[in-house]
Amino acid sequence: MTESVNTSANNAANAADNELRIAVIGAGPAGVYSSDIFLRQLNKLGEELGLGTKARIDLFEKLPVPFGLVRYGVAPDHPSIKFIASALEKTLDNPDIHLYCDVEFGKDVTLDDLLARYDAVLFATGAVKDKPLNLPGADLEGVYGAAKFVEWYDGYPTGAREWPLTAENVAVIGGGNVAMDVARELMRNADDLKAKTDIPDNVYEGIGKNKAKVLHLFIRRGVAQAKFSVQELREMEKLPGVQLIINEDDFDLDDETIEVAGKDKLTRQMVEELFAVREMAEDMEDDGDVDFEGNPADRKYYIHFNSAPTEILGEDGKVKAIRVERTETGADGKMHRTGEFTDYPVEAVYHAIGYKPAEAPGIAYDEHGAHLANANGDGRITTEADGGEVRERLYATGWAKRGPVGLIGSTKSDALAIVTNMLEDLAKAAEGGRVAADRDPESIDRLLAERGIRPIDFAGWKKVDAFERAEGAKEGREHKKVIEPDQMRELALAE
Image (cartoon, rainbow, N blue to C red; front, side, top):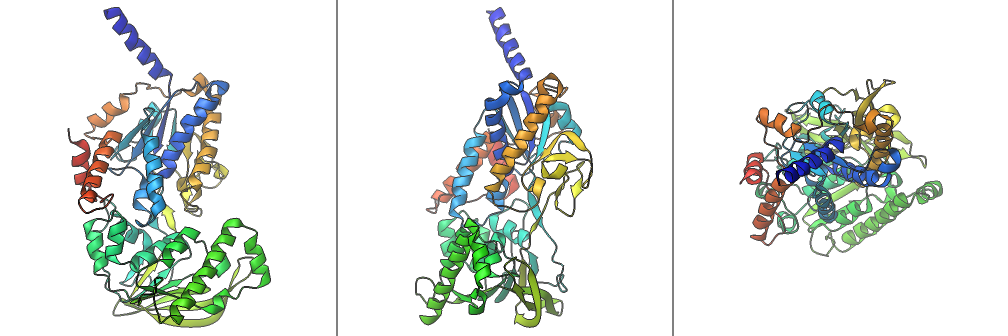
C-alpha cells in the first residue's frame, strides 16, 4: 500500500514537472481569452512542436475579482456583456487555469519572481487611465475624464463613491463607444437603469439626483467616420424621456463618401443606423419633442458631427461654456477646420478621447503608441520602444500590445496571434520550452503566503458572484454589484 501511494505521488510530481508553466498578468478578456487559446492550441499542436500537450496557466489579477473591462469598463446596460462574462467564467472553470486575484504585479510579485517559476509571462494589463485632454481650460472644475466616470458607475473597487451630477447642461467629447456610453448614462433614468442592470445603490442614488437636462455630444469628424458600433446607436435610440436632436447638414454626404463607406461592412451598417437615428430625431421633433415611445421628453440629447472642441471657457475656475469649431471631413477621412466657431453654454465637460494602457514595472513603454514596447506589434516584449532587442519569454496581448483600439472581440484574434508566437518560441527553447528553474507548482503559493498575501481563486470569485446574485434577487434583479474591496475579500475568503 505504501509503495502504491509513493508511486502515485511520484507520477503526480512527474506530470506537474512536465507541464509548461505560463503566467498571465491581467484577468480581463485579453488574459482569459489568451489562456483558453493557449491551452487549445497546445493540445492541437503541442506534440508536433515537441512541447507536449500539458500546461498550467496562472492568471494574476490586481483586483479582488476577475473580468477587467467586462466588469469595470463597459456601461452596465450593455446586454451582450452578460454573455461575454458568462463565457469568460466558463473558461476560468478549467483545472489547468489557476486564478490569483488580489495579487498585483510589481508589488506583490516581481518579474524575477515569475521568470524563476514560469516558462513565459504574458501581459494582458488593459487600461484604466484617460489620455489627457490638451485643450485650454481642461483644468477647470467640471472637466472630467471618461475613465473616472466609468469607474464610478461601474463600481470599480478603488473608484469614486459619489459623483457631482449637478450640471444641467453637459458636453461629451468623443466619437467612439466610450463617449456613447458616457452620454447615455448621463441621460439615463435611474429607475430604468436599476431595473435592467447590476448597478450598486450609490450609483442608483447618484443618477437619481442627476440634474442634466441638455447634453451635447461633439464628434470631430463626419457621419461616415464615426467609430460607434451599431449596438451603441440602438441603445442610444431607446432612452426613456430623451429627445434626440441632429443637424441635417451633417447628413449631406457626397457620392464619394458614401461609396467609400459602403466598402466596409461595419462602416456601412453604422452609417445606415445613423440615418435611422436622423429619421427618428425628425419624428421626435415633428411629434412635439417626444422620446422614442412618443412620450413627452424632459431631456434633450444633441448629436454634433464635424464639431471639434477648441477651448473650454470658464468663470471663477468653473466650466461656463465650450467653444467648438466647425470642421469638414473628406471621403478619405481627413478633417479640415473651417474657422467657424460656436460657444455652447455648459457646466460640465466629459472627454472620452481614448485610454492610456497601463505600464508594467520593469517593462519598456511606447509612449507614442500607448502600449508596452513590443517587436513590430507582434507581442514579443522588447528592451526599448523603438528598435529594441526582444526579451525572451515576455509577451503582451490586447491593449497592452496594440494600444487602446478595437472592441472586446478583437482580443480573440489578437490572442491567437500571440499564442502562435509563444508556442513557436517555446518550441525553439531548450528542454521543449521548459526553462523555468523552479518547477514546483506550489512554489508561487508559498511565496505569496510568505509575503502575507491571500489570493482569491476561482472558488472565491464564485462566492462573491453568489452573494451578488442573492442580493439582486431580493430586488427582482439578476445581480447587484459589490463594490467595496474589503467586502469582496471577506466573502471570497470565508471558510
